[in-house]
Image (cartoon, rainbow, N blue to C red; front, side, top):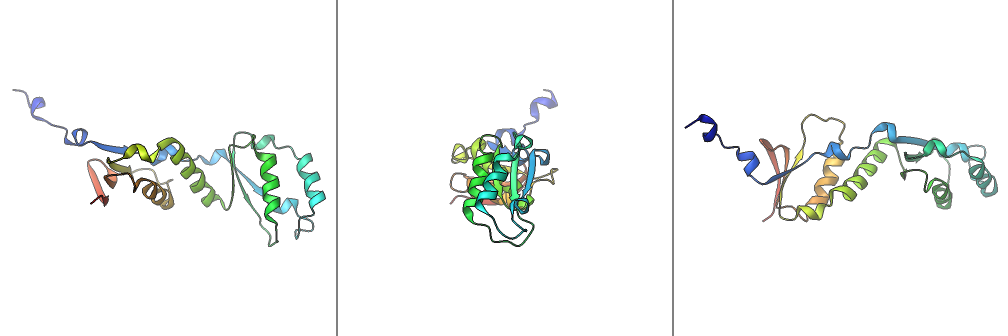
Length: 172
């Protein structure tokens, strides 16, 4: 009898499903920033007619197939309709559009991609490991969002690698 036949890979037989969150990471080269300040009159207000003219004249091709996050670097009161109007010009050009800082945008785009591609309900009553070693690009928020999405479905959730995990949740 060979020693190979005596070795049993308990990890592969455990039924644990590993999710590598880096597969859902949104690369920074797909991100483009728009500072709303450029649309403001005297960096204070939105003048509707001027704003509409600016949007019509703007070349939005640099945003093609990009994830766009919008901020405003000056303290101004911007009506919600202005962001909606900007969105209508980016729609169909940009992959996705978000208002907030870069870190929040990365988390938003991650979460959306995770939900669309991972389908958390497909992990009903499964043991899941959220792979956590090696990739430091994945934020704490991404792990929290993934955990929150999986909680209603998973039998258990762990962090780490299948051979060495930290238990996070176990359905009672």
